[in-house]
Image (cartoon, rainbow, N blue to C red):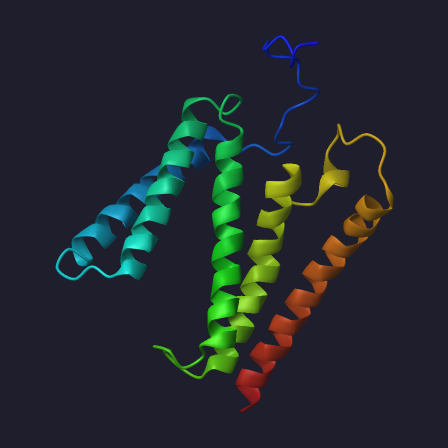
Length: 180
């Protein structure tokens, strides 16, 4: 048994069913490094805990992109960490706007809460799916998924419906902005 003998066993299929091309990884590494350097220069005179947290998250994402660029098979977990940061970021925005709507807000909290929720539905849910299953469309989208249970079949039906519902809600919101 490979696990008991501390030998690397053969993994059936890839750990992440979806992979980023090297060109996209180079672009993400460059963009995250420029953003991190820009924030460090802008925040140099007045650091707060929120700005330190933002720079730490950007540094972690940059490191994960670099690890994935170096060896995507060995550091399969790095893109999942970045996807987890995206999902947690959207959840944090929703929680902040729900429970602290006036704390340093840039506008009325309801449109910002709607936009944070729509962003979570469009970006956060696929990111959370990638964290859990290595594919943005859930476990059933993987070629090596094996036999599916009731939960996986339900999730496979729910993901497209969630996407269509979110785009419909965004459309209604934009029409509402135009009609005002």
